[in-house]
Amino acid sequence: MSQKKTKILFIKYHEAADQQPLSKKAAEKLGIFPSLALAQLAAWCRHHGYQVGLIDLHAENLYPKDAGSRVRDFAPDIVALTAKTLGWPATIEIAQMVKAEYPRALVVVGGPQLSIYPKESMTWDCFDMAVVGDGEETMLDICDHVESGSELDKIPGTVIRTKDGEIVQNPSRPVPKDIDRYPMPAWDLLPMNSYNCLTLLKPFATMVTTRGCPWHCGYCSQVYSEKLRFRDPILVVDEMEFLEKTYGVREIVMFDETFTIGKKRMRKLSEEILRRNLKVRFNIRARVDTVDRETLTLLKRAGLRSIHMGVEAGTDRVLKIMNKQITREQTEKAFRIAREVGIETRGYFMVGYYDATPADVEEMIRFSSSIGLDWASYSVATALPATDLYRIAQERGYVDGDFWRRYTINGGGPIPQLETETFTAERLRQYRTKAYMNFYLRPDLIRRKLSKSEGREELMEMLGGVTVLSEILKSSIMKAVPSVGIGKWGTV
Image (cartoon, rainbow, N blue to C red; front, side):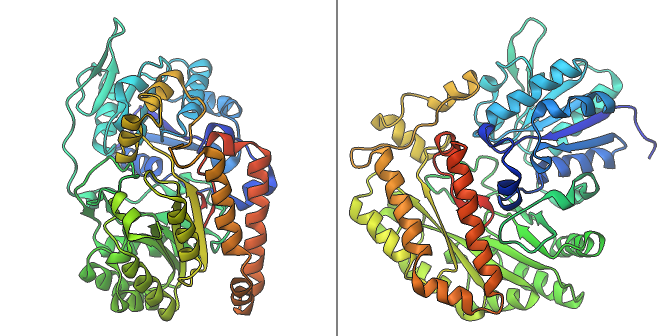
């Protein structure tokens, strides 16, 4: 295929406006991961003959202004950005930098934020177009229109600002069912040696093997698709083998919402990894009601190093309020099996959900220390947009109207913690601190970690977590992102 003249530059922002940049000491320990979304889009556009580039400001620990000369040197026709809601202020900052440094570029923004507040996001005139939903087909359509000089105003799956300033949302694009047709991410465009995480084997990479989530947990803002779509396990292992042989990757983080869906799929994937004798390790996210001994034993043989499961609450009553659709008994069983199979475990917990009582929180703290976890993460409940939690918070007056809509239009603002009739923001922070101290200062946990063959590494990881938390507090990031904590993948 002959190379086309249109050039697309993808830029990754920092995860939150106040997190750029951190000190070198904190950046080396805090989780910084590749942007799979942008690398995937870059690969897809390149597959169709377009010239692509990628700048990862987060990995390079740079301010957006520091990338101005690189934008000018690349001379893009299109600059593509992706936005999460908490990172919206930083996305605006990058778009404004592009408009100042290279105004002829078409600035396109996509990501979860645009699926929630598409028109509100486009009130910022630093953005020319927005992509809503899965990006591959829409982004390619935009590139084709730019290449041919066609009008951009009627492309499905986009929001556009017309010449008279009106913001128009075009009809949505069907959700792609076959995700196997997309190439693996453009790993060659990423600074692979610049990614860090406190507890991962290095060098590491990230992958997804599914899209979509059929569950509706009340706090989760997963908005793209309820319909699950799976990659062929053979193609998944192809990418794992490529990463191991090309970049020497020692561990892969599987960022699927729930990796362990489909026992036949798990068996096919595990057997293919074993057949190829791959040495790369991997860790996964799962639900406690989707794991069993047979599946975990097979995954362990194939290289599974650790499993991360959301627990969130310590009582069945609060789990039901959250619409988590699991029970304490299932949680205890899942982590017991993982521990017996020899897989490292991490649980995630939430402090301060609506209608939770102090007794519920105390039981969550006790429960999290009783189920044999290697690691635990605790977050203060935050009512994220497009969640049941946010809807309830609005109805009860815990937040002032549609806060996130104002946040989008204003380009940021102090993020309120979920204060209820029961908990003040300060009390929630105190409970969160208590949870961390209660879990990580237990003599039995310290003895268990030091007794492992890699005990020194375990201790260094724990000390590293203290360093990062200290840096975050010093940088006042806690004020901007109230649920920040030291997680297995960095901030959570």
